[in-house]
Length: 416
Image 1 (cartoon, one colour):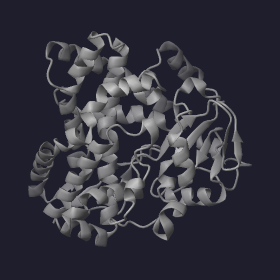
Image 2 (cartoon, rainbow, N blue to C red):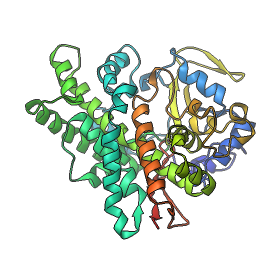
Image 3 (tube, rainbow, N blue to C red):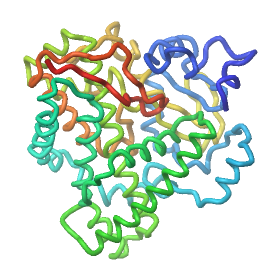
Image 4 (cartoon, one colour):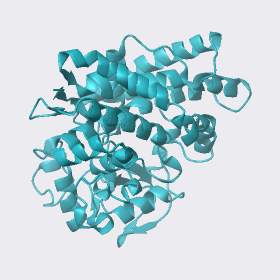
């Protein structure tokens, strides 16, 4: 679907339209209009987008809804012959990772990896995360400037997830970052043919690399997550070879994509709200709550999807089985009905900031939420205290142009 398909003649006055000028700079204005005038919104693609906090939470926590694509009854625009041939020529990938599975398969896979992401285990990583942050800031301090994304927000979670999995830190991070970006772009409801081609190429590259990593780890076992997953497969826990590779790819990508966005979006928000930055700089006790408030204020994940298996009533609307629901997390996080008249403000001491839905909800809530919070606390807190004169070196931050995983591709900063 193209921009003209969405915004052509006869389009409704109120609609979810990522082609609107300025949308990626500030999607929350459009969300506010939809939340007020059409909170259960039928999009031009046929999916139903939800913008109120209560509706979003209800859907995220409903165990009777599905995430499996096969249940969706959605008529998508026809693909070009070339793109259809790409789909026909390849085996579908990604269907066997826990993100795209319902119980009991979801629970089985999540159980195998969840012990690495418990609050206690994650908290034990704090010294290592602090050392990594210090090292990255040491590297940029002499220059007096940095690109927040390239110099800290991306490499920090990338190294952490690599170490958790027990695989060598790749010297070719740029290629992996490009692959990751191309793959997660598939979460967006609207893709160009070029984006589809890039996603296929990235998936093929990641699949080959993941198989190589699994083979390497079989001969180099250790006290790490990937070794544990391999052992589970070999012990007959029904983890197939393809499932093993798909969980590795998922953990690799999810382990850094959202945290990169959390750090980038969070620092930008602070620099645009100098008073809040100074509060955080002067009061380390704010670190934990501040990261939740930053995640609420500009969510690194903007939408999540569910599919109805039975008839569902929501907001006075009847939805048939097979309906695709888009829970707009960013809109829910700014809903005045939940957050009051200051919903659109950044307040690092907000008492209920942790009730945001940026990490999802229900049994599909983000497995790595504790780790993302820890990395955000250490990275952002250390940055603003080490460089108290930190400031933006641009008036035009570069957004990644993604509807679902909202983040920056570049954010130049002056350190002094």
